[in-house]
Length: 233
Image (cartoon, rainbow, N blue to C red; front, side):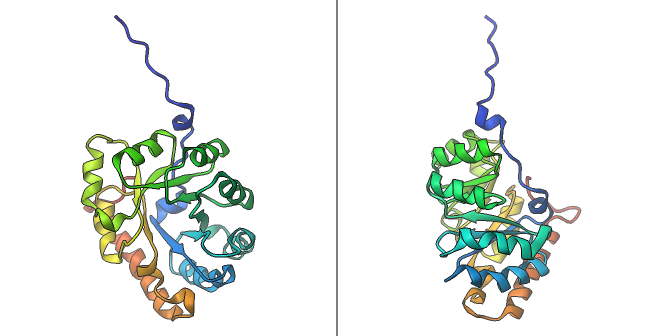
């Protein structure tokens, strides 16, 4: 008996791929600040030192309102996404504000569907195989393994067994020294928070921040040199 091929689900067939900027340097700097204007100097330093993707978090008051001004100041050299999204209302506001991508800490199929239908890249967070595959099947750009520190990069290799096409990025407790292992495991990018930002958002040294940003960019570059295994993007 001949079986009729099953067409892909509309969401999965509309999956957005990671941006060219993220492909250029697969690092996402995750910024959590006391107020949105605190983003400005830190984001500028990151951009000046090679970081090409910045995630602003909704735990920071005024993020939606400040996004357009920050995008204008950084121009096209950096993509800016909005994270910590847990409701469809937040997702709509982020898209309307011009977010380059959305990031969630949980798998919410309604949020994913909204982003997919809007054509906005989305990275949905989960930890278990069920959560991660559910997000992938719903059409996310990549799943966010969160909190990544809990499982380590070896977890990704186990996931690739039953889910060979799964695209992923780690977030949560990932340090600079962990970046090579995650990229070798096939991550499309790595999210870095405190280990990259340090105390810069609280008035700490921007010179030290620039040094950490350059080191992170160098680590990625070394992973992608000929003979090295880079990201699976």
